Image 1: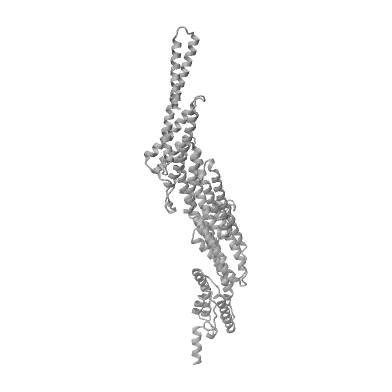
Image 2 (image 1 turned 180 degrees about the vertical axis):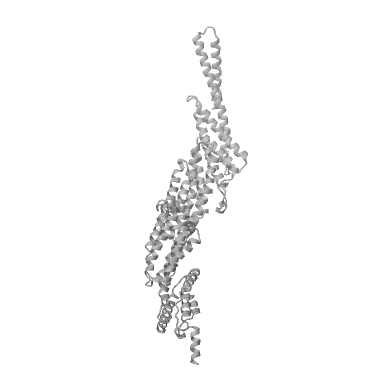
Length: 596
């Protein structure tokens, strides 16, 4: 072939010599001379093209040697020296340039055989570069444990930074050869695989919706804690680093390239991650799940800004939309479960009298429940903003209004439960105990900031009113026995009347003692306050009565001394029924003295 080209070149040179000689002849007309000169120019151009093609052929042959030599090897170029990788990229660039020059020739001048040869060599080179790309991404991937992300804010490197220039060089060559799609597909596939591996590192298992819904409570809570930890790491750190990697390698091209690659790399991974949350959000909505819903809602609400930044372009709109759908689902689940909790309080079915008038388990449950809920105040204020209309007479935020409503619902239920007691005094003790418990829970926690001073003052007044009502109902009739009565002679009672008063007081006090030692005021301070209230009234009245009529009252009529009454009052409300089957210590001494 080279001999034929050499002969052609000699023929062209001879023809050009003849044409120039003819054109120089005076016998040739001007028109013929112009034609001969044009033909000479054409032959000159042909000569230049031939020389250019010959030069391109030499370059292609040199590059082909370098490229095909690496095809025959089992080793990787970038595992060798940087000189080898640079020379390989130069060889590919030579093929690119040769192809460009060959393709720029007129159709008549193109050497199709050489063009096909160059294309075949370039395809071999691109295949090798794809292989090298995967090898670099895998070999120089940074293997990180979740603990290493704890104090990071997206500054981790997912690939050794020293290899970024090499990855960019491969990208530049492949994009320059119009093999950008092949580069992107290979890059996306490799990074997806890395994300799948990280899914395992995060210890996140893939559960079906059905499996999640059937999970036992403790097991589900463990998985939810792992999932919450995972989504924080993924959106705050890992995906930030993944997007930065895409931009480092592909950012010199059109912005849409790295944005597209990032979206494609992360789409299936993020959806798999969100699927677990979707299953939890659509599962059981018992009141106990509310804290779980709020935990996830708060986490997703905080992560929303990261998601909106990571996926703000059109390529990421699907992920962004799915994330916000899940956030809204947990918001709705939280709101629905809270309102169902409030409804359950109103409809609590328990109809049995609570022993001793103590603090009902419903009161403890509700107050401890909302005490924990107060920790989610910011989230609940957002979610409940439209549920309870603002009262012009108060300045409470949505959570305060809802908690006031919960407390009012609980109080209404307790009033109904108090009516299960036949003894009106015990009804007041029951209400006093339960409202006092509500107040104490509110005062000793973040609930005080939610309920506010006005609510606390009102309910302190309420349980105190119940204490006074108890005192009036129980001890009013007993105290009336001891009241002074006017008589005809010196304003003293008759012996028989005094004897009856002592007998009635003894019987009433004994019966009250028997029943109310079995009643219960669990709070020590409140019990002491009520006992003091009783002592101030009863002991004082009994002391006055026995003192006023000391000369008229027979000692055997007095079953109790003032000290006895004072001590017996301290036995009330301990929840252990007692009976008084004996006389006072002083009466017993007197009885023994008379029998001697």
